[in-house]
Length: 142
Image (cartoon, rainbow, N blue to C red; front, side, top):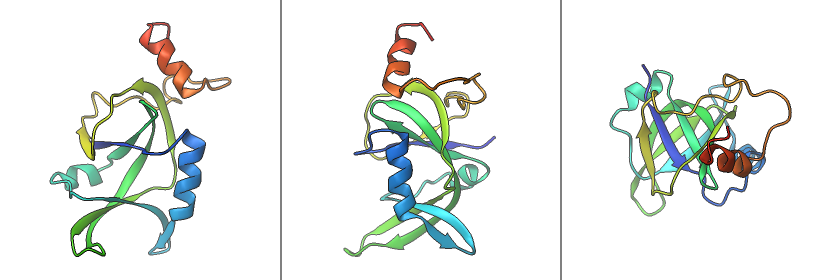
């Protein structure tokens, strides 16, 4: 079973904003489009993540989307410090909005606790704004 990561999307307002920011960062690697995400630490459980894991994005206090991790590489930044580049699939998959408190860096996320994809959860019709869906869910109405 794949392992996932969870990370804050700092400075991002909503999924459209995240998609726009990532589109500007997109790169072609081996004829395939990918989005680089830079982080200081390399996941020690990288093989489990590459076995189908995703990164779940926390946007404004709610897990809002996920992207599949397609590569994990290391490099050295301008200051001579080593860092990690997570190569992400460009496709953002909306998830059931789930409240999450702030944290630094990234964390491992077990598949059992990962929010379901919105399409699998019966998401049909007009989509509720993430903050409204999170509020309704916290009240037990969703």
